[in-house]
Structures are given as structure tokens and as C-alpha cells.
Amino acid sequence: MDAAGMTLRLDGMLVPVETGGTSRKAKLTIERDGSLQLKAAPDVERSELERFLVSKRDWIYRKLAEKEALTAQPVTNELVNGEGYLYLGRSYQLRVLDIDDSRVRLQRGKLILPQSLADTGYDHIIEWYRTTGLTWLKPRVNDWAMRLQVEPQSIEVADLGTKWGSTLPSGRVRIHWATLQLRPLLVEYVLAHELAHLREPHHGPAFWQLLGRAMPNFNERKGQLADVGATIWTGNTQSSSVQGAHQT
Image (cartoon, rainbow, N blue to C red; front, top):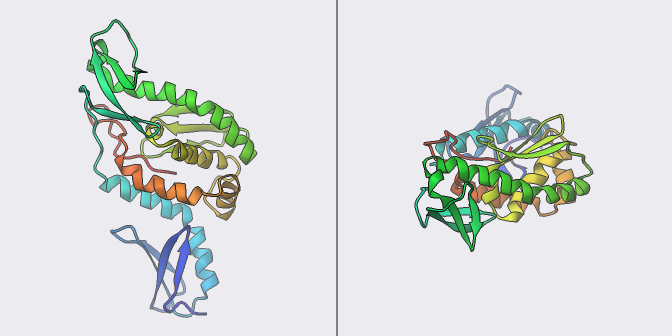
């Protein structure tokens, strides 16, 4: 079967194939709207193009993330009473109170920020996400590590710029503090995704098969993450240059 009129599929993305020219070297481009376009000579076999597309999977996801980061309008939160701060999918109203305390905390459904910390309030709220999020993540790391049959060396919550999470060859797994604003099902998707990288470093077929065995509905969660990602606060521009957080 030649390439004329062909449409390929990669992880749920449709990739139309445009035919033309005599060069047998396929060319893959990402359009302004984020869609993919593959150009190839008309006599190139479908199987050859499918292999080429799979080999470019990491490049595709990296470029799509870069494009989204450049075009997304950053979400800003204010340090004022009544501002909503998300934690595990639920919005908590901020209360700036003149109290004798030195920490941010949740109390009776409100996020409490002592007035004495207001000048550097964003930093303290982010630190609250880091410490509270780590406590929430630790037991879930053990659960997903068992399902994926991996042994992470450490887990931490940090500012990862434009990534939801990252995994180092040393076994160090890191989750962006902004991820803790997502619903638990999506936080667990990010966590399981990163843990799976301990066995499969790249986004090849073996990686998705591994993740799919542990989390059969990962594609649904992945799509939901893409939908809500641009609505998540990742730090105001006054204290951070982060524009958005995206899955690795």
C-alpha cells in the first residue's frame, strides 16, 4: 500500500500523509494549530511510515509542549482574601489573617496566610504545596511502584518549569508542586507516568504498554490533563517566569 490518501495514528493523534516529490526521506511537521502533517513519496509503504512516526514520538511531544508553553497565557493568583487556590482539585479561598503564626495551612476549608508572611506570600504558599503535596504523594508512590514493579530511590516536590514531572536515571522522581492542584486521578497519572520511566526511559511502545497494564485508563487521564493544564497556576510572574506546566 502506498502513501496516497493515508492517515496514520499515534497515541490517539491523527496524522494525515501528504504525497509528493521523489525523495524517500519522510518529513514530519507540526502546524500552527498543533496538528501533525507527514509528507512522503507516494510509493513509501505504510509500515515504513509508521516506524518513522514512532521513532519521532519523543520529538513530537517535546515540540508540542514547547508550542503550548509559548502560546498559553499564564494563570495568575492574587494574595487577597477570597482568591481561590486549588489543591487536589478543590478550590480553597485564601484568608490573609493577622495571627501569631509563621506557616501557611488549611483550616476549616480556607487557606490561611499569616499577614506577617504577605510580602513573600507566594513563596510560602508554594512551599506549602511542596510539603503538603509530598505527604500526600508518599504512600501513593509505594502503591504505584508496586504495580509498575519499579524501585524509586527518592520522591520530591519541586519547581520543574514546564514539566509536570521528571525522572532521573539515578531513580530520583520529581513532581512539580503545581501538579498538586489537579484532581487526584490526574496527579496519580503524572506520578505513574514518571515511575514508568524508571523501566522505560523513552515514550516508545514498551513505555505505553507498561503504563497501560498498571493504569488501563491512562489515555483518558492523559487527555484530561491536556485539557486542564493551561488553567493551572504555576507561580505568578512576580516570583516566577514559568509559563505553564506540561507532561514530559
